[in-house]
Length: 249
Image 1 (tube, one colour):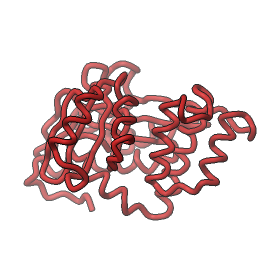
Image 2: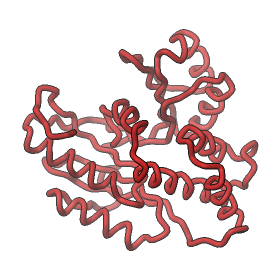
Image 3: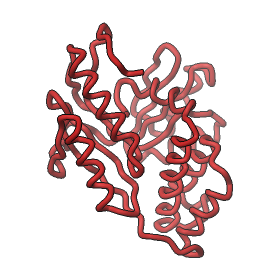
């Protein structure tokens, strides 16, 4: 899930069980294959691939998996056609959802996503229904113990960052989508380790959730979607009342 709790989500991802890690490797592998198909296998001339290889390394993805994904992209290893898809939907209380999917089976993917919404009191929406609810941005999270704030500002603002938000234990750096790979390269060249770096959907406005029943339903929907084989990322625009007692864990 991405949104106001993205940082805590990232930290939870670091403790993924093997099954979750296997899904992560599968998704990254598909992304690498697509990047190679569109831009070639040389990361020096393919910024998308370079960023994905760094992501794979950060996730401790085995080199064999990475090489096979590259070879599928070049055609050295035959494979099924892979597609990147976006599904939009509404959860309980009219909360908006954008679901990013990377799949080799479009029919399976849409069926799984639709079923997840249906079982949790939501529904799929038409393409473009949430176009004004979310903004496409480049987004990086960096732990505060990795770099001094002034130094970080100097590096990222020169590389096209739009905003840097300083929180208690991390920085959030955002950019226009067109500057994402330039910013990624600047952080890489400066040897700044990121906790997360990706093109994301950030909510323009949020829906306040003040009752535990709705909060639990929304959390359950996020979890159902996130567990699906083909789902890369889930974005929502709800904001939970911090005083609620929820069954999240």
